[in-house]
Length: 219
Image 1 (cartoon, rainbow, N blue to C red):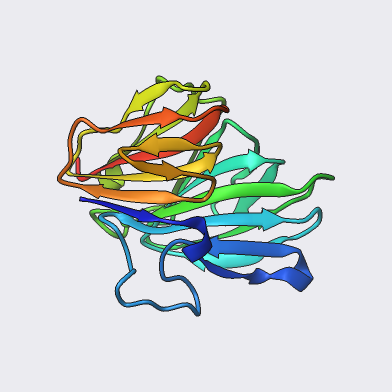
Image 2: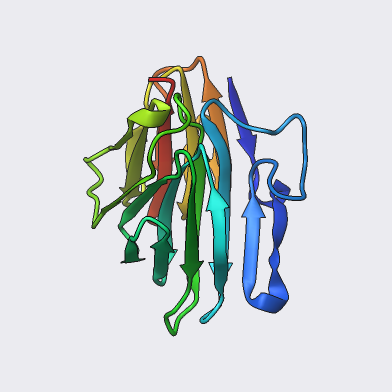
């Protein structure tokens, strides 16, 4: 089964007066949809846009795997476990909040910041928080998230290029930029697809280059 969700269907959150724009693919914060709480391990897929100087003040997380992909600009991260990093395009950032951690996310740069943040449910809640950043991850290198039984594949497709959708129990596709054809559905920026019980699927980029995040779930 393939369920396509369009960018225009996402719930808009954030605080425009504070320079924060957010688009949520699942129930999040004050927006509650009992039929859209999660897909397999994925609890949230948020696109965030922060103006220069804007950000999220220190706030808590627990029992969540948080994976961040920067599209444009630079994200400054600081947390209560002592990590302080700047995350740029091409970097994968993971924060395992485990039994509890607090962090700050800001745009301390001069340019607008756009990032996609995905929350996944761990198989075993609790434990000690941990943090990792992989700089400049390659297309051919999936990022393993064993805590949630998931693999993240980043695909940067040339015009017309094809890539296989992982044949897993479930897969989640998020289009970052460009367009790609999945079966007979064209996916554009911000569109997503939730896939279950399918094998042998491919994505084919359109006339321009495309960037897509593919989650292989249920491993």
